Length: 176
Image 1: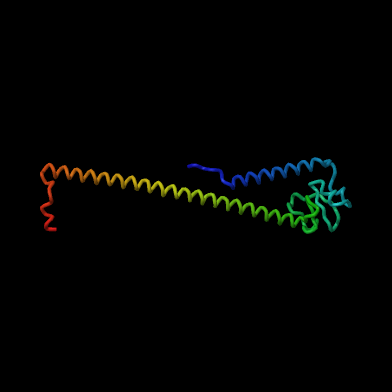
Image 2 (image 1 turned 45 degrees about the horizontal axis):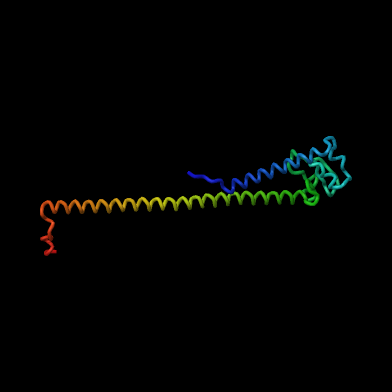
């Protein structure tokens, strides 16, 4: 079987590369801040100042900078409501960030499956045409062989008729 790389595989490689790039950038940003600075020490400052450290979460209602609770994945409501929480970007709330990432992820997954379905369908479509062409070639070969055998049989019958002197007109033709 002749296999070609599909578009979905290239899309997933691109997605993985982008994810690794973002992870690398987050690491660089995290290492650029002194490791001893705690997020709580930036209370009373601005959102931009707080979010310079990727481990920090800014809450607009309390104007406080807190360490992101990584054990709970999403920050609990008593720490800061999702509408008022900022992480990574000051202009986008955490709830909008989660929704947009979920939508983008869903679109990527759907696009991957659509590409996978289309590639498989197109490959099968081409395979069906090749199969039909192969069957036609085989049928034409069989038809040619059959015609050759008929011609050989006719010639053999003609030789037998000549051998026994029956090559003239058929005496029974007047009864037909």
